[in-house]
Length: 439
Image (cartoon, rainbow, N blue to C red; front, side, top):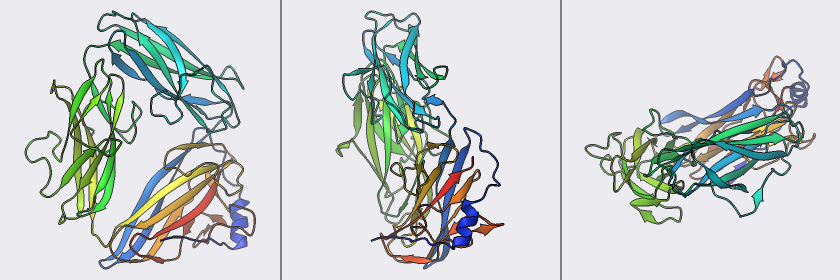
């Protein structure tokens, strides 16, 4: 069952918060971060849980960003596809022209840009583009650059392709991204988490020192990790899949009673994956701790290894935290831009980084879910107003979004919290509020 906290605040407090002008100007590029906490009581006592951290970047006029360049190896005569994105970080709508130049001993031909709206690194159609559509402030346009390596090119030759996006609002403002292509003979593998490509979590060869994700679950309950196998080499290869709590994959791979099942994007169980040169393959790793697993955090590594050349491999570091079955409260934080500060999000809520301009608003949504087996009581969600922002009441008077407890410090709202409530198994509750970025 899902319920929603209805927020109501004293008019004097809201007026003080919304009318505050003491904040200093906010510099473009400032990162505004926010994290919520919650306390609750179960049969073992009082517990505290933290949400994920969400981040907002403050924009500046006539500004844009592009993703970092990619580096790929491919066979002579093969086609390479480089994923790109342009983000309008200015404070108004803008259109960006796209162009490229390339240099080096390796020749590229048939270079063209194509829409990649879902960001999966593949062209959505065969209609070439030379400019983005008009992008609202904070909007991102995703596309791919497609090129063909010269036939017969010698192994080791390289090409640098510089992709440029230029503002049409102010044509002296542009951003560049350089892709490097090398003629290679063999496959290469890089495992990333959540998404594919060089900007994803875990990008780069070798096991990471810290877990890229930590999933919360109970003993005997399955949790899932999404990983991508990125073949950055010059030939197709089949990779075997494995999991271990030992970074070196020696001895006993998993604790007694633990299981890991790998599935492809369609849900079919797999033990290996064939990945074409310059492409990626999505894998879902289902991890189930033993029914009697002791609460605590367990590091786990996933490995992809060539079936023909064992030296070609990569590992990614993840972690699973097992908690008591009666005390599993999941707290997730989401955000969305609210450019006109009308109290309504302009886009879907997301956990990803967004962009927003000074004097515009951000809407926050905090979702608390009881994923345990028993009712938990006295659940209280708390959050702080981020630095460089001011609490915003939301919609017009009479349609306020929340009740605030202990919100006032020297006339300004600095902390929000809810009254205590109970959650049965699988029950949810939300707290919603907004902030305005200081001018």
